[in-house]
Structure formats: structure tokens, C-alpha cells
Image 1 (tube, rainbow over the protein chains, first blue to last red):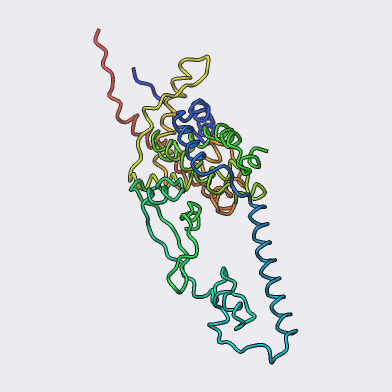
Image 2 (image 1 turned 90 degrees about the horizontal axis):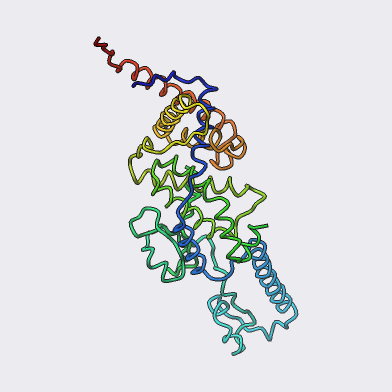
Length: 173
Length: 186
């Protein structure tokens, strides 16, 4: 027996698409997907910093940095010139032990790079197993056992931060 | 709110979020990739991404389903590229609830053809027809999920429907030409 179907028009097409949606309504993922996800949740630790909390931390760091700068400026203005030793820039940004020796009133702020323009973004692929060892539950999108990451590297070659290449980046293309 | 609870680290809240949205994401990913196994992988990737980005997710910028569709679309396209081909969904069982068996058969055939037609569309048309016509997203939400202007969604949707109809017409014409005339022996 052969069934002859008439080509649909636009309204019939939409009706068919709705029927397709209804036919698919019962489709669902197997329970193993949820199980593996929850395993990943458990592996990542108990809590996630929320956006507002992260913003709070940022503001706190900025406030502390600003207070340090103000304190340094006030100290510089208040101190008699004769008692202020002249130091080289290298000495001024060295460790706090230098201050203890009386060489400089300045304190190095370790987390600020002297020249942000010197920072570079390096993209590379690493084994997802290596990231897993560091506590990052990442499954590789390509299925080749590696994931794309981005690192911010200072002029001294030391990595300042690292992040997994976000999937949202594709939408920019 | 579930998102806030999950952001605070509540395991059960994240599990509830998953149970609430997984089926929608799965159906979308299945239609995008044309493969059950790939769709399962996509669902897992989408919720892993949500897990990673929970702290940065801002509900005021996009509703969660929109956000999930956006991520699912990216991962599906990525995975489909890796596969280099789409698997036919012709074998999928279509269950149509209706009282008229002949109408059900015709409808079921048509659903099968439409499904195959969607799978054959270019990804940019496939995703927009799935979001707007199958998952009933508004143009604004679809635009947010696809990261394109609303006008682009409208034009792509128009073009997608046009292409799909053309394909269906071609298929029907070809099918009618291929039919062998029946012989009656008395």
C-alpha cells in the first residue's frame, strides 16, 4: 500500500512542527547523565562564590589597595625629607623586609603588576586529566582528551591566571 | 529561587534545576545533532558549563532556558562539526495522539519528513526554526540565545521555513514520480 502525502503549506508546516514537538515531549535523558553531573558537582567543592560575593571581594581588595596608597602618600608628605632615605625603584618594590631595615618607607603590593600592558594572553591545549588533578571537573568538548585554556602570563613568564576557554566565545564568530 | 540556592552551593537546588530543564535541552540538542548519544553529551556539557558559570550567571540578562539554549546551541554545533555528518532521525518513533488512524499515519509521515528536512537545513536555519517553531521561544529570547539581533532571527526564520517547504515539496514531487503504476490482474 502506498500512502500519498500532499506537500504542506506554511500553516500546515507549523502544525506539523507542533506535532513534532508533541511527539518529542516524552523524550528525556537517561539517569546516568544526572548521576555523572552530580558527581562533578560533588567533586567541585561545597560552595560557589556568587556574583555579588565575588563583587564584594573585588571591592574589598580595591578598598585595601586605595587605603594603602593613601597611607603611603600621607606618610611621604608627613615624613621629614632628611629622614627619608633615597632608594632605587628596584628597592622600593622589593620585599617588606627592606622596610624593616629602614631603607624604604614603601611597601610592595604583590598582586599588582607594575605594567599591565606587559601581560599576555596565551591560548593552549592541556590534557583534561591534568585539570581534573587540579580539581577542575572539565570534560573535553572535542573528545580528544584535551581542552582549550587561556592563561594570562606576565613579562617574567609566570602565569597570573588561567581559565577554561568559554563555550560562549563561539557566538562571537 | 533555585538559581540563588544553587549559587549558594545547595546540591539539591542544582539537581532540581537539571531535572526541570534537561528534557528541553535534550530535545533541542537531539534535533540539532540528529543523534541521541551526542544529545546526551550535549546535555551534560551544558549543565557542566552552567555549574562552572553559576557564579557569573545573571538572571536579569537572560532567563535560564534562554541561557541553556544558547550554550546547547554552541556545543551542538561544535559537536556536529566534529561528527562531520548528521545521523538520520527517520528511525525515530513518532507518537501522535489522535482518534483518526489514517490522519495519524499521514501526520506521522509528515512529521518524519519534516524532521529529516530540518536535519538537512544549514545549522543557522535549523537552530532558529527549532527555537521559535518547536520550542516556542519568542523572537527576543531566540535572539538572546543565538546572540544575534531580533531582525536576524526574523529573516532566518522566514528563510528556514521557506527552505524547509521547498525541500518537502521536492521530496513529495520525487516520491510521486517514483511511484510505480499498479497492475490489476483479474
